[in-house]
Image 1: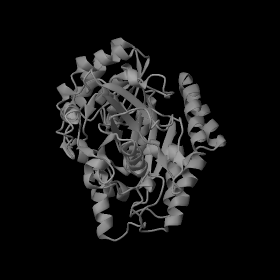
Image 2: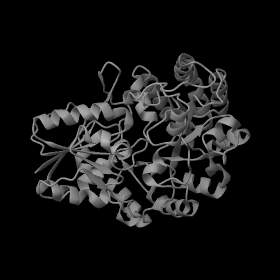
Image 3: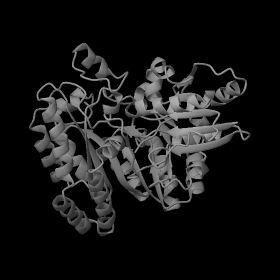
Image 4: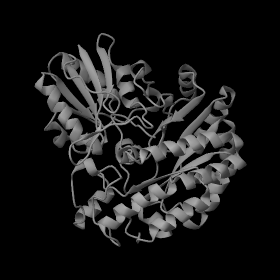
Length: 446
């Protein structure tokens, strides 16, 4: 039996595939499935962003990870494989929320996390008794396994030394589908298992894929103590609340933290309330960012436009804030009502959603009517922020400022900024990078 695990590329409105290597990382979820697959099954992996799919490869079963923006392309891939006699199973947040939609194009769907049902899927397939839907339960932290990294080799990825320490997020942002899939409680892996995986990866730079690595402060402090002897550098994602705990912040730095992706979302009090981030206060944002960066930790802040409280002034106001904060990187996106979220439900009730073309659900396109500006102004404002922040003038101004304060960080910051600059010519690369919370069979994050 041959199993093929597939990462689909995105398509634009003209059904052209949008491929690119910028910042590509492997889908660790598919690596975990490969690890859980019995040894008598041949496992292959293809990322359509990096290579073309060979539909004549002889795959018997094809597993496709699907996020909302890649759903149309995933369904085409499925139909192509079905034409040559293969069976197709989908997984990820999108088919978990809309399983009946996915079943129109494939043979089966895993709803939820796949670990506990994957061996059943393989056994059922071998008996030719594949069920239409498999309901996966939330996986206990002790049962989270390491991915089979061999499947990622020689694929041309930008960065492969990634892993996962926790799952879940306690926050309830109305635009985010993470808590729908993984729940609002943290599941922390055994620290000894995390350390073992890092040692097996054997790379000086590690990327944690957790949605909020420091959400459980007690766990994070224990983990960071154990990381110190490894003498690695690492990147991760956190909320600004890390700045409220100086012990945690300094431990993160001592353990090797070099940079954090932080979802700031909005610079206004009204906007923060709107996305259900009441724990974050607009008047303290700059102070907290400064506190983190003073410890030598770079910040990439992410911002969302299109909130009901946003006016056309929000774009210049956000840029002024970002420049004043002196953060190393910034990401900008348009509020997107993903299936199953509170945001989608509200906008549907208000009759404001203008399209259900999933290709446009990439945080780079306006798919609903904004309250205080036109759709065109929202789209223009997004593009304006990207191009203004990543102009050569502002890149070099930023790099010189950071390089003066932190000499060792100047070159990495320059490289990252120029990489983002290059991505501006491939808008969907930026969009898919920003929307990386819309995961595959299991969690992914950027």
